[in-house]
Amino acid sequence: MTFFEHKNLSKKMSKENGFTMVELLVVVAIIAILLGVVLVNFDPFSWGQKSRDATRIQNLEDTYRAIELGLETGELTLSPTAGENGDPCADCTSIVGTLAVDGTGWIKFSIPIGKTGLAKYLPALFVDPVNSLPYVYTYAATATDYEINAVLESPDNAARMSTDGGNEQGVLEIGSSLTVL
Image (cartoon, rainbow, N blue to C red; front, side, top):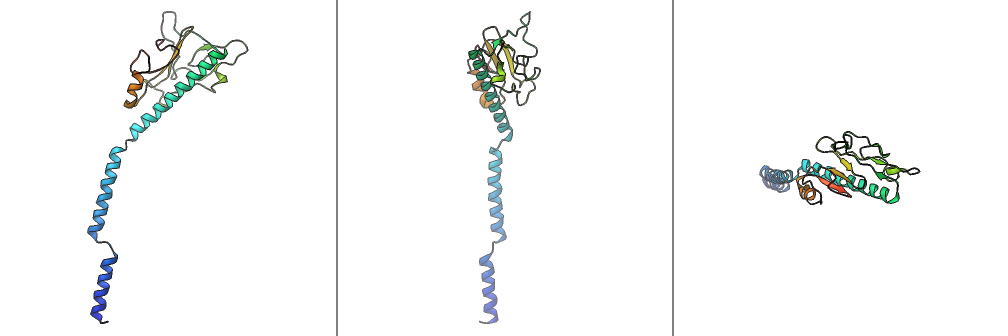
């Protein structure tokens, strides 16, 4: 093999083994386009709203089950929450009331002698993930019925709030009567 043949062979090998600058730029451009498509469809704000709404829904369902069990087993009796003039209870929200499960928290009830109340079913009352207006849990009761409410953030849950059987369109309502609040 002559010097010139060796030089041409090494040139051929180096071109065959590596990427050209154009090839690298094409690959980088394709990755950038794919990344752009993914980022456009990735909305962390929406995911946060849906996550907080899932927590709210679960909290309301757990509280509902605890109250229903408490009523069924005689662990608690409902206490009307309206004031003398029919005003709503001032501290029956998760933003103002305490988390106590003894009837003094934001959910008001009486505990019969020898019973434990909601403490038998819940360690503490729940707090809304945001817990500032309008995202708070609200409670009201009559002597026979109660209702717990929450406002959901995600627009995807708007239908759930308007079809829950309650009397307010923009609020998720759960309880024994959905017209108490």
